[in-house]
Image (cartoon, rainbow, N blue to C red; front, side, top):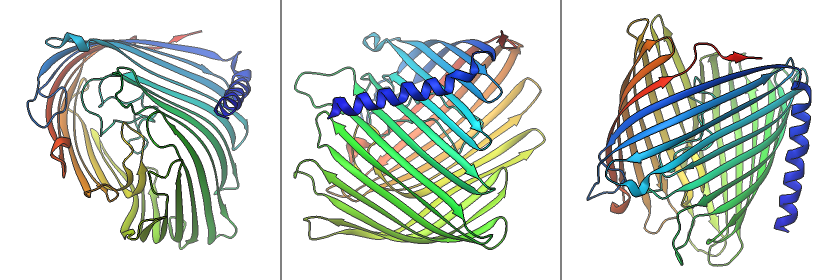
Length: 444
């Protein structure tokens, strides 16, 4: 069955790629190489609560970006290999790899078919995949940091998605997608459990306004998660939202979200989550949006007598303030999810997070940045109950020494507090980088 599913997915990906690639062969080709050399000092390379180990890490990386851009289709490919050398812990001298492929074809106005693939291979749990929208803080990279991973063991992650979207009318949208992703630990020991998994997930959704004032959103996905050393499971999630537009920018809604998890073996308890909510959404302008809802969730287990329940705020916030010499960005969010994207499957996760970023151009060549973020995670399914708090802050300077060379100096502080002492850590790091790239892309 697994081989059949893999064969179907491979055939779909090849067909989708061929459809996207076909119109771009006569288009313009752009190529940008970039060389980066950096030295980082960190006072806790293993992210441990005690007996911290510090080290200097020298990283040399090459970024290669190619684009084929046509009138209605395109292809973007970025590959970033880098080598990290530890001054005192040479056993962790590894190559890191990050890559992203994205190709699309606008079949007609409002209709797009696309294929994306993100890859990350590293030993650093703070690394992420290449950010496809660095100027959009609300987006972020496809593969994020692994907040539960510690140490410096190598691992690789990959996420592939094929998507079809169609916009009809000013506000009506339909999409369907198929995602395949996996995590694989590279440095493993005999008889030691690994976090490896493979996930196949189709999804579908529609937003339909049937009058100027009334509309609905209906979406859902199915997830088939195949673990190497854990209990396989299936997840079904559906969400329905009935919306009423009070003005062109302000709308209210009532919603219901349902999640069902079924495990392959009885060692884990199947459960369902019921979550009705009410809220509103406000679109300020291009640089701002607010969606805030509140509801009550009930996690109903198949065999356990006691259920988990409580109030949850479901929100997504984004605001950018632009001024003459810089900008300030705020992003935030809250809700519940199934925390299963990293080295641990922690089950139900109720989270609240916020981030404030600042950019100021001191001169035409010198820019200053600063940021601060906070995240609260509650895991009610853990025994005993566990909650984590993660605080990040930092500042930096970026100087354009030459038209083709930039110098950057950054400081980062991160602290993890947890009900479990073994999960806590504090890290300070300073990094100096030199980046060299041509002033204009190579064109053919």
